[in-house]
Image 1: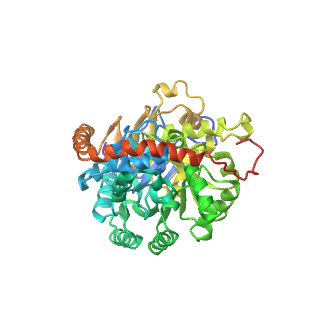
Image 2 (image 1 turned 30 degrees about the vertical axis):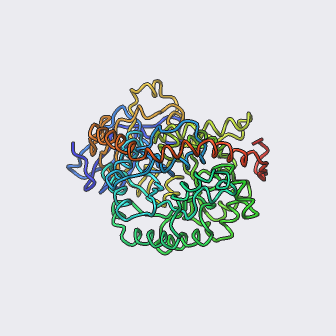
Image 3 (image 1 turned 90 degrees about the vertical axis):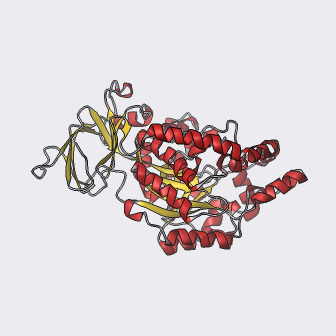
Length: 502
């Protein structure tokens, strides 16, 4: 049966995952022109409406990745013992020398994995050096369109390198390395703002729910004037603003030294916080920061896999929820979380809330985690019609095979989505009522062809970036000793939302 975005389609026979009920119950979904028309049993559909038989399956809304980096698809598995700062030092090696075709390919790798693992939309902070380009971001958008996903794509920008942003780091490098690092100097922010404006002015993908945004990468890596310029551009064009805030302890310590206040307090003073602002990671935020974020209606993107992988710490999910913050869940990029599996991200989010205290009263529930990965992430992306299987929402639906070992037995639907599903049970995926993944295979992508192209690109880029690899090997021992020394400094978070220990 051909499934179309136009006309009616009746989904019949599936169980609907509902946090309000322990086990999903048989539910039909009538789809009209890619939108959910009605949900229930015994639905009346127009004569001739095709029926999609979903018997033996559990359906849930497409998961939504609130923070990733499409440019990292080709860098999967390239590092091991990396802190965030070591990852940033490796960036020219793992991401350099890309053609426009590479920029589409690397994004398509990420998108293909997300679709296969039940994710239908993503917030992608996409990096290009030395400037964001219309062609490069158009290529990334084309990748999401080809995979059948929805996305928000934000050029990720800065006007200072890490070596300029972290006091003393440049001076810690030998003179020869300082000269090499100087080649990485970024463009004056006026040029970067002009390049972003050009991208936003010529964006052509919004009709396919692939929207632009703006991402000043890390506050410390951006002059205040630049941060405000990014915010002004975002507001002029009605798009989102997304930044890595308090990801590592290095950022938190240096931020307080530089601004005399927390990073969130500084962003608040600049007027950057609002409903369209998302703070990625937010590990080193205190309770006053949570209150500021909640008061402004801002969002946080919780990336538990990356936070553990890079040794950055544990986001306080329970406290953020209790403060009234909107929290989405993300995978982060393939270079620092290694996969784009939102089921894994949910499971990590649940477990990380538990290891912070032995008192289960302060743990996040599986229902809260499930909601964060759906409607919480949708809000962070700026979509009001994603994240639920309900009338008026887009028909982005994932069908899990109840014959998969993950569902033997099926005791508690949303709890098992969070704690036992790993992507292996994904049978079909729809966006707008169109099957983009059917019977465990992509309908819009040739995965074997993608693998061949990725391997050819990997070999070519390895040779082209050999010089940057050598530079990284020289930088690694300096960065690996200097930055942890900063992180060893005391940094006290104000905590009063609950009595649980940190």
